Image 1 (cartoon, rainbow, N blue to C red):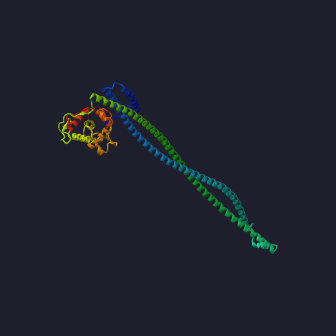
Image 2: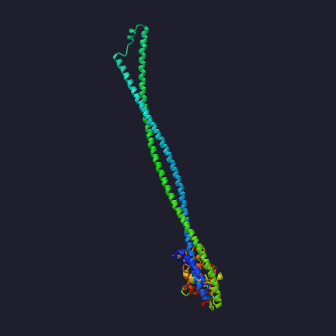
Image 3: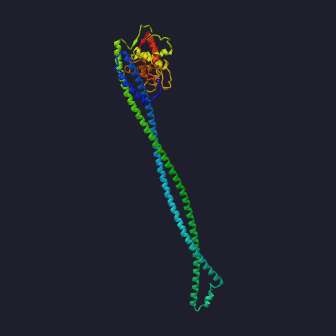
Length: 451
């Protein structure tokens, strides 16, 4: 089936169709002659073909929009899922940052405590150093006096110089006590020196450890802050994308609603045209009957051939497999009880679509078209095998033709167009004579003529 792209907007075409209908309906009031009916009928058929073409384009547009809608919905769902993941990551990063901030604060407080200890210990070390210096000076003084013989008295001197034995004992104990005090002071001095060294070492170790922890905490805090900033930026990016996609989805939905409204309007317009056309056809039949006319075939005298006869080698420009395919078309029509005129319509269509060659390819307008009738892969014409089987393809064509209201009274090309929905309703007109000729020869009526 050959369909051309639209050359004007659907809305303008719908308006044009709607505007044409009242004019045509007004024309019905003219003289009730066969010619006037024929002119009105052709005009209505042209309008119906145009409306049908718009309907096809609307169907195609809706399919495209539905695909876009599905894609947009899928993309938005993916983005919303990514957004949930990003938001969870942001919350995790924020929690990590808060933990790092607390750790950094604790370590900073520990460092302050250590610095306070430094101040206390420094004061203590300074005080102890002063006391140690004084003690060292006192001990040194005693040592010098002992060396000079003034700070030490021998036991013999004490005994000889004593006034009495008790006095000697007292003087001896006094000297012993002084020596013990001196020894005690020296011991305390050594202890203070040791404590000062230990305090200073401990202080240095604590300060070094806390400083290291502070550096690590600062680094950890910086990493956490960076991660939180990245997560926030990613979340914002996805939120913006979701907002954009939501807007796009709303736009596609609005476009779909517009197409649906146009489709509904187109359906109404076609119904008006179809009703008018049916009325014209009925009146035309009556006028033709009154004038002794008919839209049928005149068989003429039979001359051999017909069902069961051998197929001719050629008919006009057709030969070989083309004749075999044409016979399959007639067999399919006979099985459904289609008359000679209907068979000629089917033959004309097959000639126009494929030149009676069972082609395994489509065209630019219908890349998926196949077979004698170039039937599309849209589900309406069966499987690929059905479309490539001449008899089945012809059967499906004739079944569709029988379903067209008033097809018997339509111009052959318009009857074919009602089934095929070609871009040009009059596309098949040049093939009518050859279609009638082939049907006449294969049916045994070589002089067949059809209106």
